[in-house]
Length: 291
Image 1 (tube, rainbow, N blue to C red):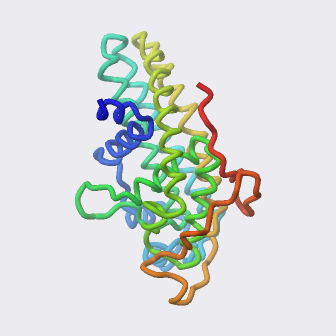
Image 2 (cartoon, helix red, strand yellow):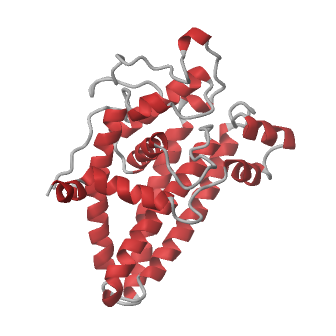
Image 3 (cartoon, rainbow, N blue to C red):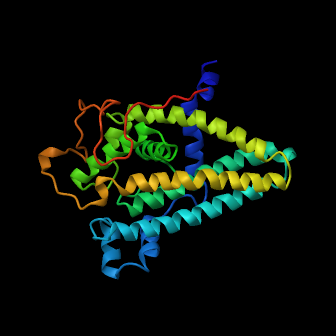
């Protein structure tokens, strides 16, 4: 009985789908190869090399260039995921048990892809390890927060901004494991995952309806995917482009961090009514689903 309740838990449901999407073939983006390819037409070889070895911000690449490359990547991923969604809608209602779960998985997979591309352009470190297919808890937490930003969750905006602030202070080359897995950001990760689990269920239902009629369902499904994916990707781009990681960071002394951690455990996230400078709508209070 306990196991059944766990399966029905929105947080667990979302985490399971996210993990499955992150393990799909072709979902993981090679940071080095992507930056080299994406920046090739806009930057010198020296700048590209430094962007790879450090970050695009450290290489002094203008935000205007990063924004242009980000828009190109968003258009590419939007076109790809929309075409795949349309193809999944062709069989019609008889294939729904197969096509809907597959469509949701590939949709989330492309969300993971664009999240990586935007993160790497705006100076976040590599999200995935090169070793095996495992996804560590910190990466799962960070992707959850990125998805939260894409879905317009204000608490995710604030949490992503806080993580970016930690990393910019320490010039980190990896995610802050402690903060994302058991520190001050972790409770927000769990709440955002629960919220996204509910939204995922609603989205699955909408896709089921759109695919009920063969061929016509393909057009509706592809259009629906385009209409949701594009603004979500743009929302994440806007938020990441305004964070401290985009600007060159100052080094900190050794006593300010231990094992890559800068955050103090007693430091709370700002209350819902507080203003967060430099961020877009970063109130902490999480929107609760209306139904």
